[in-house]
Structure formats: C-alpha cells, structure tokens
Length: 236
Image (tube, rainbow, N blue to C red; front, side, top):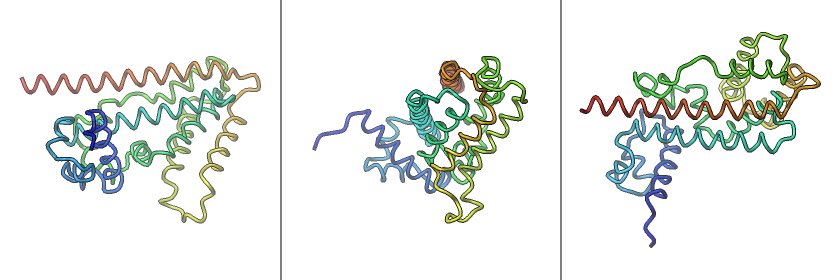
C-alpha cells in the first residue's frame, strides 16, 4: 500500500472534518472523531494542525477557496456573468454546492457552536463594512448597475435573498420548495431586470468582481497572519 503524501493526508483530514463538523457541529466533534473518520492517528492530525480551532480554520480557508473558485469559473463561463444578476446567480450556485459554506454564510450556531464566541475567531477578526455594499457602489460608479437606487438597501435585499435561499428549508416543507436551480435562475432574472441598465457593461462588472475577490483574499490572509503573530507573541 502506497503511503499518502503530506498533502494527501492533509486533504483526507479536511474531508473528514468537513463531513463531521457539518453533520455534528463544532462542539460535538472531537479531534479523535476526525482522526477515526480519516483513518489516521490523532497524533498525525497534530502534525498538520496544533488544535481543533486551527483545524476548523484550515477547513474554513479551504472551503472558502473552493467556493470562490467555483464562483469565478461560472462568472467567466457565463456571457452575462458580469451583470449583477449573473454574479449573484453564480455565487448562489457555488454556495449551494457546499453545505459547510452555507452554514458559514448564515453563521449557523449548530455548526459553529462555541467557536463563534471565541474572541479571536476568524469571523470576529474579519468584521468590516459590508463588501457587498462597497461592490454595489463600485458597480454603480462604473455604469454596470443602476445608480438611482440606495446601495445600502440593495445590499440588504441581496443578503436577505441569499440567507433565505440557504435557510428556507427550516421554515417551509421540502415539497413546497421549487428546485433550487429554478429559484436561482428566477432570482438572477429579477435582479437583472430591476438593477442592470440596458447598456450595462458586463465586462467591467467582471473586472470589478475579480478585484474584490482579490481584496477579500488578501484580507483573509492578513487576518490569519495577525492571529499567528499574536499567538507567537503570547507564547514568547
């Protein structure tokens, strides 16, 4: 039997963690549970992650990267991907593919548990003005989106729609909910009809989104670096 590489073992650990954290939640999942699911020793996990928190954050980082990759691939493949409806449609399709990211998006207390209350959690570290609000302002300034509507209100409506998509099954019976693809396509069409001007610049929208994604990645990396530096200083 071929021994897995360091990278392969790390992905096996993260796959097991994603399955267990999504199903049982942060509080009810132990490092021993993850090791058992991954088919490795508990000690092997600590060669990759020094704690359950570090493992959880490693999983969050991986899933965020996968989500972003799926999102941007859809954007670039879609001729209308640069409109606000096209962008939103691609993001919702990408989000619907990952139960873990859906839980992160709505800060599901069942999945996140006590991690959310930790003073140095990544959610608290990365709190800042809504990037969606900022992006809408940029789209309006570029002429890729109607400028006669309040950007803050539009951002709030978009948040409501996204939260509703990932949480609607908690308040409605499954048989009463249309197929998710139909819902996403309907949301995108409504948004483009309401918000995209007839002469809207879709390519400019793609450029702006790529810039925002890169800024988000840099902020995430900076938050992680600051946390690592703080831990190092406390240890010294």
